[in-house]
Length: 382
Ligand SMILES: Cc1cc2nc3c(=O)[nH]c(=O)nc-3n(C[C@H](O)[C@H](O)[C@H](O)COP(=O)(O)OP(=O)(O)OC[C@H]3O[C@@H](n4cnc5c(N)ncnc54)[C@H](O)[C@@H]3O)c2cc1C
Image 1 (cartoon, rainbow, N blue to C red):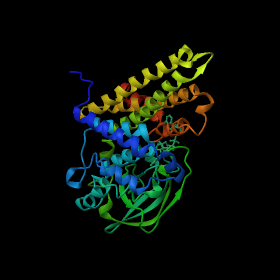
Image 2: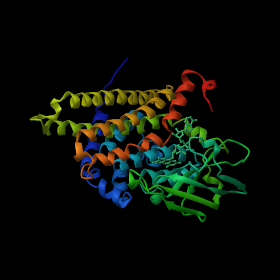
Image 3: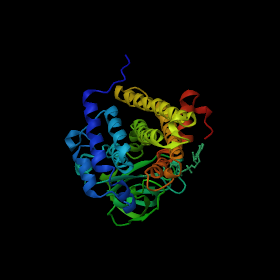
Image 4: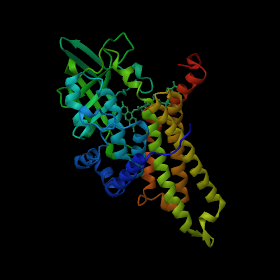
């Protein structure tokens, strides 16, 4: 049976996060972007609301939520500040890896993640391994009870303020199988260098080098070498829908501001909203947001029902960020030269909107997943 409504609890959570976003997150976003980081007090406030433990089991101090409720939370965060949404999104993605660790590791890291005291990052991408992750060169060589890691990860978000990274490495140079390790960033041999980002600058990305890093065996994620990555990736389809919903939330908040602007901006003796050249663009934007948003929630609903959703997740992951970018761009143009100014938040949102078009898989990789599902793997050209 179809039911497009949210539960009372979900509506209550939406109001709570919206209120927090308006009062606490939005006002300081520009200052955080300038500073290039999110202050620990802000991360603590986000964690105190229970938003850092959305997929962390209660025994590790998390506050497990279903996928639809998590979508509601991320959508509301993204309306107010891209960095806060990214922080919660990233924490969710990394918790999917850390839960694959042994009991010791989970006891040490999961409560700290849920309380916002430790930030774990994703360190997968390398110079020769972006879309083609299987081509990565980082090696984890077994040495008694330890692994010795060597390699370089050249695009790690939040690197400047993180505490550990999920590092993808190869334990057997002749195999394409990848193994994730949790690598504390204070270990000897780990160094970090910043990257100057185009958008969402407060999430301070960087390059992480690993030189003869001696890592105790308990930091391997997954029961066996070569297993953890595939186990974690099975949980990742819904993460794609979270990113898509966040994109549309930024487009929607920009659209709402543009509706107000178009009502009050007078040219040729009438509000510009009276020109169909303007109002039809707004009508199209509202239509596209509505279309994309409900497909995102369908993905999350499928996830909560335990039904397959890879194809639908890939659809929203390519379409929504592109659509959001186009809508924010249209809204900027409707604001004329004011939209181009740094005094309005639109230029920042336009730059922020590019990130999800690339991160966690480009449009072409998502379309390849859809091709695989609707035509078959033999129709892929790689
Ligand atoms: C802001 C930002 C934050 C990021 N954060 C992280 C992070 O925290 N941790 C991390 O590990 N990575 C991170 N990434 C890296 C991200 O996951 C990669 O950028 C992404 O996977 C694409 O890889 P690439 O940039 O090397 O592009 P490439 O793989 O080199 O692709 C370049 C172009 O070629 C196209 N292409 C590649 N292969 C194919 C194909 N088979 N068919 C058709 N077209 C193809 C792509 O679609 C793209 O347009 C981040 C990226 C960005 C932009």
